[in-house]
Amino acid sequence: MIVIPAVDLRNLDRRALGMAAEVTARVTAADLDRPTPCAPWSLGDLLRHMVSENHGFAAAASTGAQRSTEDCGDLGADPLSAFHDSAAVVTEAFAAPDIYDRQIEVGEFGSFAGRIAISMHCVDVLVHGWDLAVSIGVPFRPEPELAGSALAIASRWPDTSKTRGPGAAFGARVPVPGDAPDFERLLALLGRHPSWQAPC
Image 1 (cartoon, helix red, strand yellow):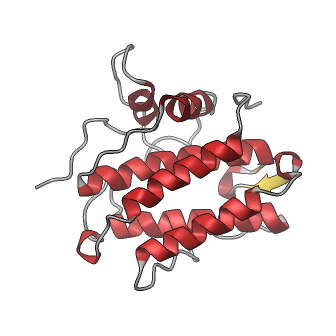
Image 2: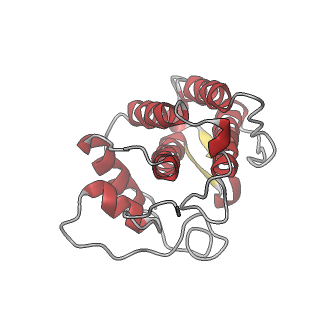
């Protein structure tokens, strides 16, 4: 059983989306081929994934239907608009009064109560927001409440072949000092090196 913190998850999710949108606003067409910590994805691949995830979560939350998150991430000529539009769609879907109690299908991971599904989406957006930021070399510093809540959520996820290792959602854990800030611990937990920099 996954236990998550007693916080306003919809608010946390909106804040994570807002941070990712701020980074996306600084992405140019020339950046789309940049490498990211999510090898072998380029920045454009990662943005398409994020747009797809937003639409996929929204569809599952609104209708309960399973939807592939790999076929609806069209960035068109304006990646910023594509991300903003997808963020608005998922935010609206998560605003349903009974959303925490709905069963939501989360891709290959199975069906979860809405509260857990939103927490999964929040962590995914927050960490991928950092992936985008370091790819283009801009700061990404979540507020302590957001970082701490995301770490608490991800720390409760089980280690399985679906969540870790080659081809899984996240890489193997990366060691960091025990007194590292919460966000660095979150990145390391999900297979990121907090000091990652794009190759010159």
